[in-house]
Amino acid sequence: MSGLQDLKKNLFGGTTTVGRQFGMIFTLVAIVLLFEVLTDGLTLTSGNLIAVVSQYSYILILAIGMLMVIVAGHIDLSVGSVAAFVGIVVAKSIAHFGIPWPLGIVLGLVVGALIGAWQGFWVAYIGVPAFIVTLAGMLLFRGGNQFIGNADTVPVPEGFRYIGAGYLPEVGPATGYNNLTLLLGLLGCLAVAWREWQARRTRKEMGAEPAPIWISGLRLAVMVGAIVFATLRFAGGRVGTSLPISGIILIVLVLIYSFYTRNTVSGRRIYAVGGNARAAELSGVKLQRVNFFVMCNMGVLAALAGMIFVARSAASGPQDGLSWELDAIAAVFIGGAAVSGGLGTVSGSIVGGLVMALLNNGLQLMGVGVDLVQMIKGLVLLLAVAIDVYNKSQGRFSIVDSIMRPLRRDAPSVPAPLVEAPRQSDKTPAAG
Image 1 (cartoon, rainbow, N blue to C red):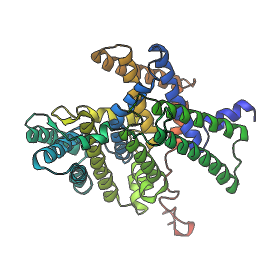
Image 2: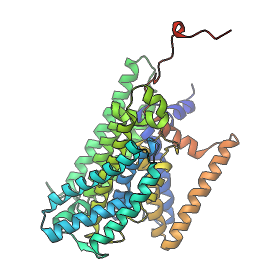
Image 3: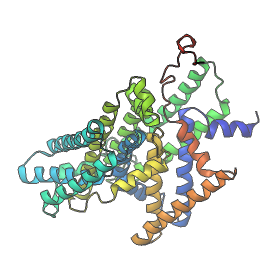
Image 4: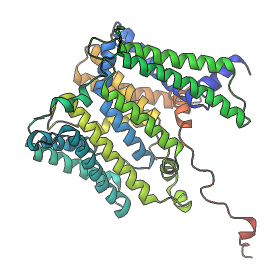
C-alpha cells in the first residue's frame, strides 16, 4: 500500500478512536482557519475562544442529551422551555425562599429529572409519539416559566453565577498563564498518547495489522499540537479569565457520555432500539426502559443547561431558552446522526455544535447583523449539504461523506446477533 493510501485509510478513515477524533478536528480547523482569514485574526484570539466556549456550552450540553434521544428514534422539542422553566424555578427558590445556591442546583436537577420522567412516561408507557409529547411540553413549560416568573427577570447570587460565568482560578507560581488550564492540557496530551498506544496494542492482540508507525506519529503530533495550541490560548487570556467552568462541566459530560454510549451494555441498547426496535425487543432489550431513560436524561441535561445559562446571565428571564431545541437538533444532525435513529456519536454532536457556534461567532466578528446571520447560516448550510449530496449521487468526491464517514464508524455497533437465526433442524418444511 502506498504512503498516500496509508494516509487516507488510517489518518482520516481509520478504525481507531484517535483517528476519528482527528477527522473531526480537521473539520473544525478548516472552519476556524476560514474565519481567521475573514476576520483578520480575531477568531483565534484567547478572548474570543474563551467567549465561544462560555456562550455556547449550554447548547453543546443539550446536544449530548439530544443525541441519545435522536439515536433512540425520537425528537425533543421541549428542551428550551424545560431549561427556561428550571431556570426560573431555581432563581425564584434562591431569591425568594432563601434556599442556598448549592441546594438550588440540586433542586434544578431534580425538577429536570421529574419533567423528563413525566415526558418519558407518556412516550414509553402510554405510546404517545415523542414529537407530540415534547411539543405539548414546549407549550406547557414555556407558559410555566412566564407564570412563575410573572414575565420578570429574577437575579441569582454571586456563588451561583460561578457555574456559568466563572473560570479556573489562579494557583501556583506566576507563569503568565493559568496553571490549572496548563495542567489540564498536559493531562489531555498524556491521555491522547496513551489511547494511541492502547489502540495499537489492542489491534496487535486481536491479530489485526496496526497503522504504520509514521501514521500513528503524525496523528499523535496533530492531536497533541491541537491540544497544546488550545491550552495556551485558554490559559493565556486576560488576567482573571481562563477555561470557563461551564467548559469544564462540558468536558466531564462528554467523557462520561462517550464512555456510556460506547462501552456499556445499556448505552449500546439505545443504538439497538434506534436501529431496529423490533429486533432489539426480540433480543431482550426493554424498549420502554430505554425510551423512558433517554427522555428522563434529556430533562436532566436541559435543566443543567438552563442553570448554566441563568448563571452566566446573572438572572432568569422570560426569553430564556428560545430556539435552543433547534440549535441542539441541528448540532446532532450536522454531527452525523441519522434522522431515522440508530446512528450518531457524542463527539460528532459536539463537533456539530462547534460548527454552528463558530459559524455564528465568525459572522458576528465580521460585523454581520443578527438577522443576516440567521439567513446566512441557513443558506450556507443548506447549499453546502445540497451540493455535497449531489456530488455523492453523481459518484464524485463528497466532502460531507468523507468527513462524516469516521463519525459514522464511531457509533457503537448493535450486538451481533440481535435475533438468533433458526437452526436448520428447526425449520419447517414447506408444504407440498
